[in-house]
Length: 295
Ligand SMILES: Nc1nc2c(ncn2[C@@H]2O[C@H](COP(=O)(O)OP(=O)(O)OP(=O)(O)O)[C@@H](O)[C@H]2O)c(=O)[nH]1
Ligand SMILES: [Mg+2]
Image (cartoon, rainbow, N blue to C red):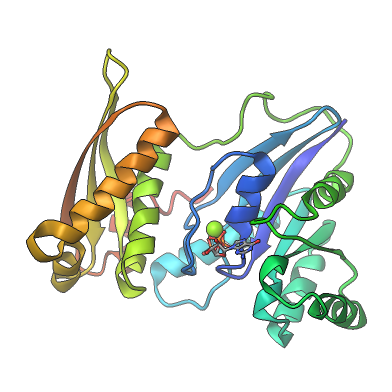
């Protein structure tokens, strides 16, 4: 039996979390068209007869702007050095730049086996693929490259096998019914953040933290969820809430529906919007909001 941990690494917005969700067959990480969607490491386990792959999703590589981003990059660096293998996710549709080659070389040089998932091939000209694969080879990236589409489910079996092949022989690290290490409470907060990422412009969602204060299952099986949406500025709060509370109502309603789908039960959701000036640069507040438990 092959068994081990695999860091899922790549630039922000490359498609890491989407690929991970498809590979493990369950939504374990939120996804959005905006960079910096994933803020923390998330473990996702895929168990088959012959192997167990424990993926660690990571925050995408991004220019540093504030203490939160710096912390996210630290998480990614730490994870990449502490695994049996690396799955480097490259957004093929965004083109291949020198910085991509440099990043792949950097991670390939860490001393653990690496495979490249060249993703989003469903939205790019197919003829670019062999040219990019050749360019990578000529640039000295020795890892195998698998062109895939997470959205269309193309070529994923071959990628999965290649990942399993990189792992050492050993017993499974996790029970086979475990898919993620994250609690339902965490996921509920993340689903709220996902809807905020989808609804508002760049600056707003990046400055938002979601803090779940109550997550309770009643005897009749329904759930009570009370959460705070914490933003950085008063004017962000006004935008989040919208005219007569319309914006927040809409986004909360989307989130609630997704929470109900995820939990398989009715959810009573209460949402508060709060301001904490520049929390992303204040480590005490970051900790309070669940970031910075460096592991
Ligand atoms: N067309 C297409 N879109 C994809 C594919 N995979 C991901 N996407 C889209 O790419 C965007 C980013 O996806 P994520 O999975 O959130 O990317 P990520 O690498 O986890 O991003 P961060 O967490 O911000 O680092 C989303 O809009 C996805 O729907 C794919 O195979 N095909
Ligand atoms: Mg992600």
